[in-house]
Amino acid sequence: MITEYNKFRIDKMKTPNDGNRTLFESIVHVEVIKALEDWITLNVDNCVLIGGIALSYYVTPRMTQDVDMLFLTKNDIPLSLKGFKKTRNGAFQHNKTHVEVEVITPQSINLRDDLAKQIFKTAIKNNNICVASPEGLIFSKLGRFSKQDQADIENILFSQKIDLSNFNLTEEELEKFNKLKEETIILMKKLKMKKIN
Image 1 (cartoon, rainbow, N blue to C red):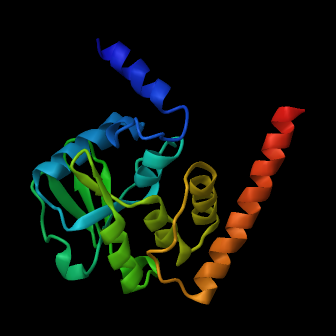
Image 2: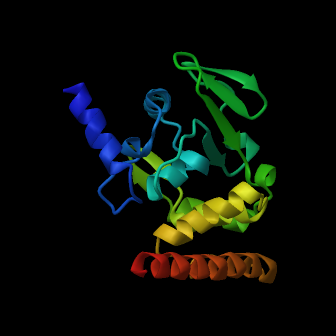
């Protein structure tokens, strides 16, 4: 029975989420699921899941154990959590699985407060966890804008329809986004042509 369920999960992970895959079905490592299940029992609901695990909910999942929880302020972050130990400022480790949960604020990822609030507003709930929307994930990555952040944004653009109307972007943020969007469109056209030939 467990083997059948794992095969079912693995089959669902082979493509971007079409709406038929839960957050937990999008997570490759079972230890991360166990850590998140324990997180849920603590009723820490003033945060939103961002980062690689949230990204895996929308796109073809990747091998990541990074759990990133966005809080609006440092004061919103719990001082202690049952079943987790504080390993450093900004991180808790799940006692049973040793999965680390990064607790992030807008300042720590160079994110404007108004965009952070919009990420909270547009988040969806799945498996009793608030998960950033595709747009929210994009904007959580625009501030730092590392190579990995850019690749993640392109991955979202490649697999999801994006609506920017709820986000008040600066010219610089919009320019970064539009450049990546253009590159993604070009790549998609090339891939489509390759399939035809």
